[in-house]
Picture 1 (cartoon, rainbow, N blue to C red):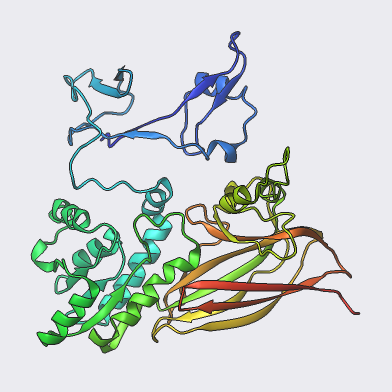
Picture 2 (cartoon, rainbow, N blue to C red; picture 1 turned 135 degrees about the vertical axis):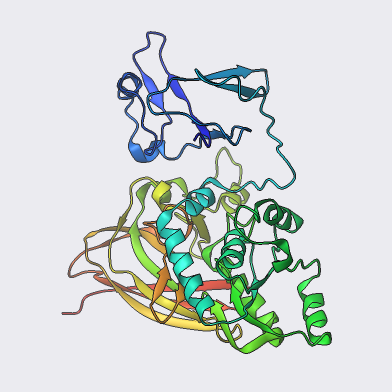
Length: 427
């Protein structure tokens, strides 16, 4: 069955037709003749993965094809749009025109979020954690504290006795409309979904005044719609909302994730560091505003502190982890939000140039089995926080062989303060 077709560019860069640039990602496999053309391009596999593809979903739900069957995809374009016909030898025209607006229930997610939802490893980890939590509750009253449609559907499907309250702070009505569209396909009915059109303050007041039973399962991925460019700890909004909802949580409430671990490592990041160097005066013009806007870090004046920048580290060109990964802060979601501080040494395992530190949160979804969802630099679906040094530091055995990291989480503004000191080996 055909679910969609993905489209991308193969660009001819010269008039002779000898130089081509491909935007094909690793997961697309092309015929040999096309592959031969694309092999003339010098672009690396990782760089090709930077490109986004357009995906077309046929409107027919019964678009079946057979192995080795010839299919015909016809494209038509105007100045502003492209539409398609899909034909097989045994079927008549399936689609006459595709309109980009297919309904108000359509939810547009980032490519990374779509990739995450399609990742079998992530789905297996989340479903195992949910199933274990549901086995500990007879009639779960579950509050989905973020914008996770995945969790709302999974809980409603896996537990026939559950009642689910999705807050959907970013999706709002769109999230509920989507659930309504997919409930039959996922074997649950909308009477199991409690629609909340109130603010969190009104929700607290309503549940307290009506003496309803309390929430005994609080879950999140955490994922907040429209928050794709946030620093990792800005997803600690989940902890803040867990704190605000404390009075309507049962004493034995299960919370997923139950902890967050702020991880840090030192990295070699030459391309990123050069791209974020401060601009000096050019032809007498002061570029300090440009530096602030772009998040300049390299060659900063001594009086200024470099900001945290959200990046997919895998997209930052040449990179290398120089030492061990350490946990510098631990957030316990079983307790209300509070300030946290921590200090940890990092030993360098390789000689090289340290351009900065990379931070991310590992979410402990289920503590007993130590089910941990890592969002570190080896995972392409999450951004990490990058703290670039004003000046790169050469690290090697015998000199600057370790560094000490100290971090503070301030719950009043949700920010993390980081300090570091490179240590000289005294032995």
